[in-house]
Amino acid sequence: MSEIAPKSVFYCGVCTFPPEYCEFGLSFKRCKDWLKENQEDLFDKLYSDDALANATSSLSIEKQEQISKELEKKQAKEEKKLERELQLKLSSKVTIKRIERNKRKHVIAISGLEVFNIDMKKLAKTFASKFATGASVTKNAEKKDEIVVQGDVSDEAKTYIEKLLEEKGLNEVKVEQIDEKKKKKPAPTVIGQQH
Ligand SMILES: [Zn+2]
Image (tube, rainbow, N blue to C red; front, side, top):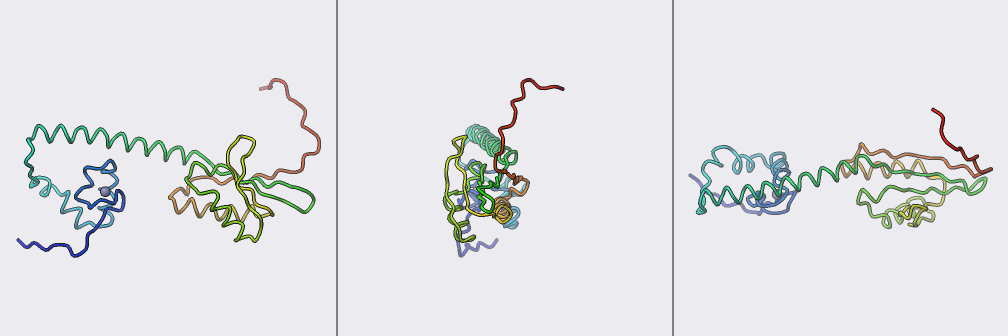
C-alpha cells in the first residue's frame, strides 16, 4: 500500500470544503456530481462501494445512522430550495421595452433582472460605456428596479443579457423585446370580456 500525500490541497467547486468534508455540507448531492465530473479518481476513492465499506468510525452505528438521517433531511431540504429557486428563474423572463421619446429618440427599459442575481447598477455602467450613452437604474411603475438606457440599443442589450444568462446556465430564460410607441389616444375601456 502506498501513501502519497497530495502536494496541493484540492477544494470542492461547489461547497469549497476539501472533498472529504462535502458529506457534512448541505450541498452533498451536487458536490458528488461535481467531483465525479472534475476529479473522477478522487470520486472513486471517496465514494466507490469499497471505499464506503472500508470507512470506519469510532461512533456507534446507531449514532452514525441518526446523524446521517438528520443530515439527509437537511440536504433534501436544501436541494428542494435550490430546485424551487431554479424553477422561479426559469419561469421568469427579462423584458426590454423600447420606448419612443420623440421621432428620433428612443430609450430602452430593461426589467425582470432581479430574479437572476444580476447586479443592475454594474450592468447599467457596462451598458453606458459599451454603448457610449447614458444608463441608470430606476424604479418602474411596479416599484421594481429597471435599467433605462438612452438610445435604440434593444437588440444589443438583448444579446448581452442572453450571454449573461447563459453564463449562469439559464439559457432557457426568455428575453422579450417590446416596442412601445408614443401614445396617441387612450385606448377605449373594455367592460367585460366576450368569449
Ligand atoms: Zn463539496
